[in-house]
Image (tube, rainbow, N blue to C red; front, side, top):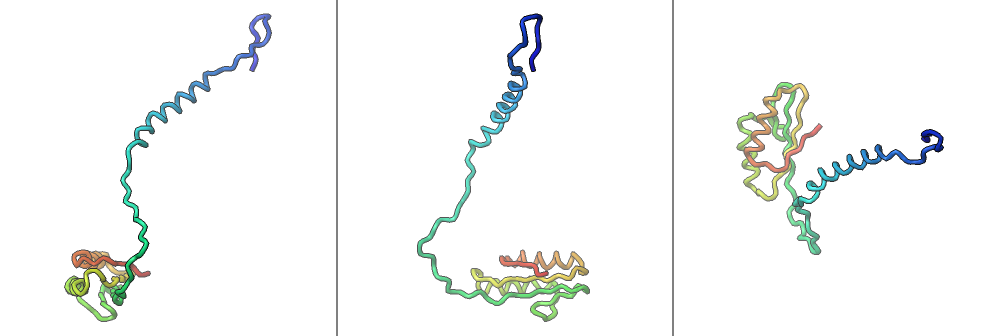
Amino acid sequence: MAFSSGNKGPMADINVTPLVDVMLVLLIIFIVTAPVMTYPIAVDLPQRVLNPPPVTQEPPPPIDIRIDASNQVTWNNSPVAVGELQQRMEQEVQRDPTNQPELRIDINPDSEYEVTAKVMAAAKNAQMKKISFVQ
């Protein structure tokens, strides 16, 4: 925008104040973020293997646990007490700790959370590694 000052004609200078404000904001952003970018983050990436070992073990059949609306727990379609679950799971883990069966848990939405928590605690205490939920 041109302003006239007296009879000299229009002023042709640019107002640099907004430009300086923007540059100062950018400078502050770079000053704050630059130290964060200099710290390395350790990431363990998998290394390429030219000759992967052959898979010789076939996984054991999965274990199906169902909790119905009346809070009855079944192990592969046979009723089981909640207190007995951890012992059964430990037996499955001890058969072959490196090749554990998958534990599939099917929960009825009307069942109580306490029973589900006990089943999950039994699986954790038995050190089951492969746990999935079925819908």
